[in-house]
Amino acid sequence: MFTQRVFNLVSRLIFSRWARGYEEHHGACEDAYAAFFGPIHLEINQCFVLDHDDAFISIRIPTPWGKLHLGYVLCLGADEIRRPGFYSHWQKRLPKVVYGQACPPADDEYFPF
Image (cartoon, rainbow, N blue to C red; front, side):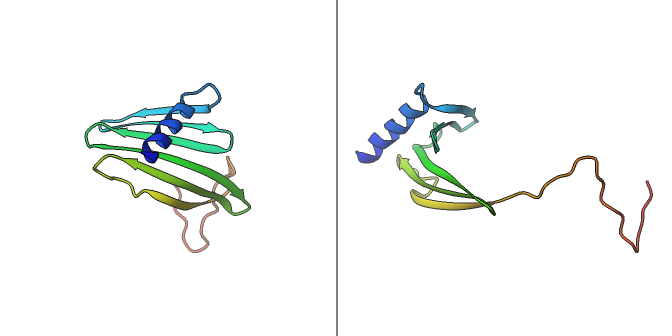
């Protein structure tokens, strides 16, 4: 009962006028909807092949080394595809790309093209 109410709340917030960055994806087995509500990232996935729906509520914390994702997953239905509960994910910062600069050739081998 509590999970169903939170799932409905997340879906209402995603489709509300206060949400920003709305995205949707329609796949062969699942529809996904996502948006930002302030600093909070909201996402719902509705699977129509299996008896499964889930909702993600997460926040991204920027650090000097990358981003830390903290969140909670709610699952509805008999078939649990994703594990419900709290989760954390560390996303490392990508190296800076300098456009127009090629890598220097190695000293021992050089292959001209």
